Length: 322
Length: 260
Figure: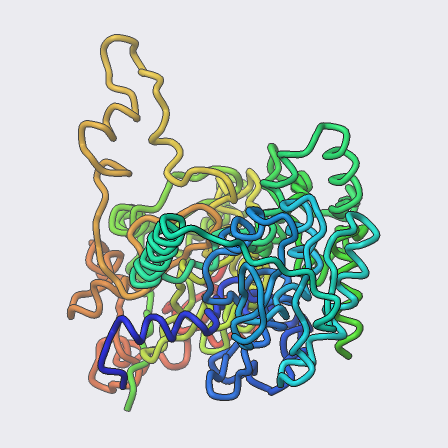
């Protein structure tokens, strides 16, 4: 037992939150989603009698499970990613590093850059920053989390086809890092700002939201971020990107019985109830994270999902993990 | 020995007055029939045969059979199951875990996904009802039309004045069950768990003027339900026995086929 509750909260901050109500297997047991089990290098993510379980003592905090979970059932207890992006956006040549290797340099830190093995998050970062940014991987090889490197490369490769910007820097000589020189006044205002953010995050953690009920719909944070960023694009760009990124969902009218089971199954709210009972549901593709719960569930095989770019990119990571 | 709740319905005594069904609706705040969902946890199936004057009318009360081999529990895809067997043998439901896939409704031999008009004549019924996705529950109480304009109150006004939804809401606390369900979940009889846990009888049993409904612990030989079961051993019937669901609701009638 830690004597200090605040200290305990800070440490809990580095772990994972398991939201079982979001988990595909928890919602519909017959599905065979095993993305997190497969990618975890240390067997810290398991299926127990209680269901999805994160074994804290076995976890290396590489965040690969968070990156591959399609529905946001595994959440990293970190500051919202927006904070990281804000820090990077203030730099001309932003460098993102990790707190696992404090000796590396960077303008912002994630616990492990393994989080960016999710191409969707990497894409969102590229859209948010709108200019090249470097991922400081110079010490990754000596880190137990080096397993995430090949996935990160695939992730960056996938994204570079759409909006090339993330640069994976493995040699110190390739790193282009400039520390901002700050005046005394700037230093103290920076310190004040940072402390404020830290205090806020601690306060948020102290009054953590209770677990969602299974019936609630919720988007993974990265999808919410992406949707917000898409709004900022010009109309042409937005239409072009949304057309490619998201899947298309069709219902075969003859086979759909209108039971609306898929509306209930969907954890993210991509299936909306029909206007008239008995009709097929309405698809809201921007909310679809292609977890394939609905297609696995539909006994009349009436749902046809044509993957979008986001789904295809995610599949590249998942197939590499087998 | 753990409890195993069960109910016997003595059809010699039942006259089909419907007091049980009304008491249930009142107790459990169940909605009015809409969209093919009866929301009747206690309901009836009825059958009229023959040509006048040689006619025959059969009426049988139906409710969740709290089956020992409950198909609704077996198919529930959620972990931990939203539809589950409690230690006392009753089949209960957790609305916080229910995702509204309706597989329980589909699997239950006593339930229909959507009831047609024939259900108004008692030709069929459904012991599991569903609160449609995206539709407000208790929706009839949002209606603002006044039956006699300027004279009678609208449903919405009654709700506002009474401060409950429905206005006469019975606020019970019962483990996993909420007194009013939300949209996108199923609902069904819970053997009035909130009353039984406090040593009371289910509302339908209390309301029956003929004492045709007998509720109790089947594992207790001294309980009323065990006595009724023992006394009518030869003629005891269960609804759709051949489905193999091992219902815990028993029907007593010594002549003819009581099931409709």
